[in-house]
Amino acid sequence: MPSMVVIATTAVPDHLRGALSRWTSEVVPGIFVGSVSARVRDRLWHAVTEVVGNGAAILIHPAATEQGYAIRTAGTRRRVPVDFDGLTLIRMTASRTVKDVQTPS
Image (cartoon, rainbow, N blue to C red; front, side, top):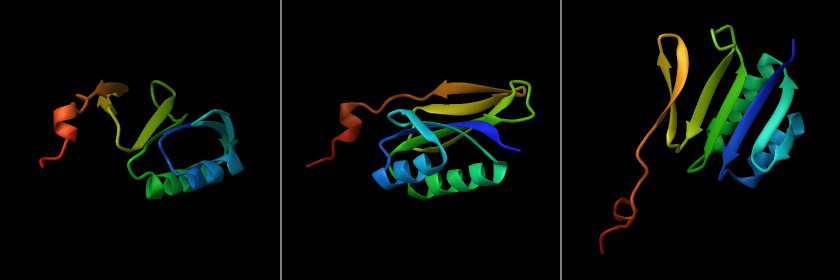
């Protein structure tokens, strides 16, 4: 039975966006919404995790949890889902400073 999914992407290859748009609608740049089966959802997510590279992606789909949904993430991100007594909360990690990003000469 199809269920609604939301996939949000940041800095991913264009071919991934094209693949996602075959099964979902890109409602705003990088945000894909659709109604797909669990099998299609899992195959789409597998494709995302294979090519996300330095980008980031998040999948939100219905699940039998207290909140009614589950969250999966892939790639580089500051927001990390954390289980807290059965609830999924989002933990923010520290951003990289300019000093951390610069390479020594």
